[in-house]
Image (cartoon, rainbow, N blue to C red; front, side, top):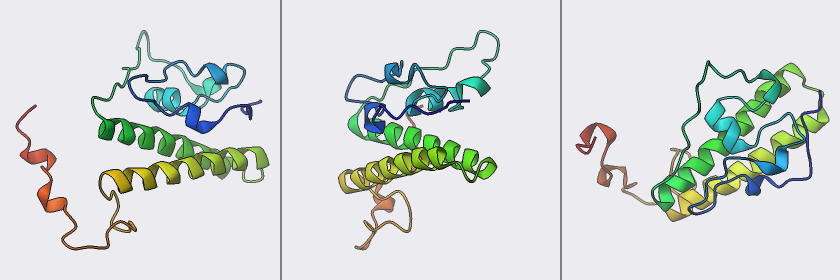
Length: 147
């Protein structure tokens, strides 16, 4: 099974402003979905994806820059995690490890960029150097009334 196609850059699959990447054209010859398509399908591996009846995944369209950054971070984190699971089964697969490293590097870069522009996402973030952290100023999901 050839799940690799090293002719693409992971950042090409990350959404760009106002243009969600839904077709992953660069991965046509690979059995591995790109991060966006894998994220919305819930599976990075074409050979293992079996859609439920006529289900079509919802297209995720961010409404602002922060939502777009979170979507990009989520899809790259998902791709990284899927490759990690593959490495649990095939720990000596060097090509899978290379894919994992690429996803991890892209994820870390996206995380750093997000935290520099918006806010820290983890309690171990390098961006939590000042008090108060600022979380108390945010509207918490259970306090929102715009649903």
